[in-house]
Amino acid sequence: MNGNISTYLIVLICVAVVFPIQPKHFFIIIFIIHIGFLLGLSSMYEGNRFDLISKQINTTGTATFAFILNLVFYTYRKKEFVSNIKIRQSEENLRNLFEVNPFPQTLSCLETGEIFY
Image (cartoon, rainbow, N blue to C red; front, side, top):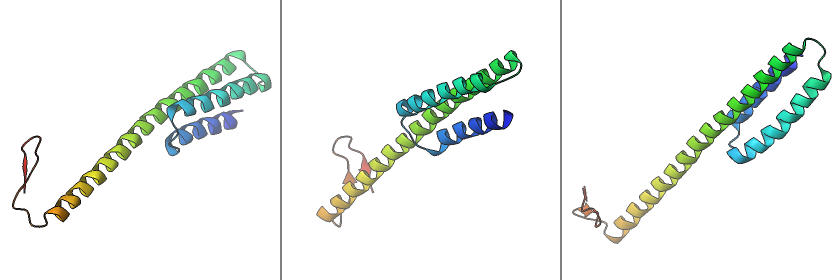
């Protein structure tokens, strides 16, 4: 049973890192799969009961870690995406400004009064 549990743990962490799934959807998916895994593990396991409980605790901890990892990576990717959109919009605004006045002497922000060269 050790090989299957190790594979399950590795797949959990890899899915959390590789796929940018919304945390809400990832939680639902991981919850359903993990409940099925725990039920299957307890019905197929033959041996020491404490060993079974420790494996269930370890896999549940790993599932929790995978969820937190997914949350962190999703938040980072979302912030990066929003930042890239803002940069593109800023570049487009600057291009439009130079189309209106291709030879400006100074550029300044009307709201803050900041001068750009």
